[in-house]
Image (cartoon, rainbow, N blue to C red):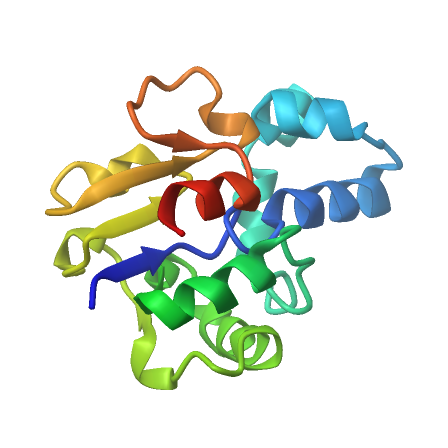
Length: 174
């Protein structure tokens, strides 16, 4: 059975939406959906707030109750019937994210065993046929095929295999 490794943030969870929600809460500045999907979040915020997204990500509640990316549950459920699925998140950078991410996965993807959830730093350790991720840095030493999941921060990144949503993942892998 082939293996698919799937990133969490900006692939199955909407972390950018949380950044925008908290930024509006703290500074009363709201971004449109078009802005959020067409630019890096860091490029949207005021220059004096540089570094704020990183600060948010270290907050204990940041990764709690993130919105799920449309279509991800259904497509991953179908992929799970044909492939061995691993959720692989570079969570070690934000250690406070470990428990909230684990709970989130249990709530939204209960059929994925805890043995198939990998909290790591360098994703090159993952032995899979495909890695669906929003950051090409994780493909550099990955032995399988990197599949870039489009996000505002990677629109100008050149990568051969790219999907824009979960329906395109379905079309590619099912």
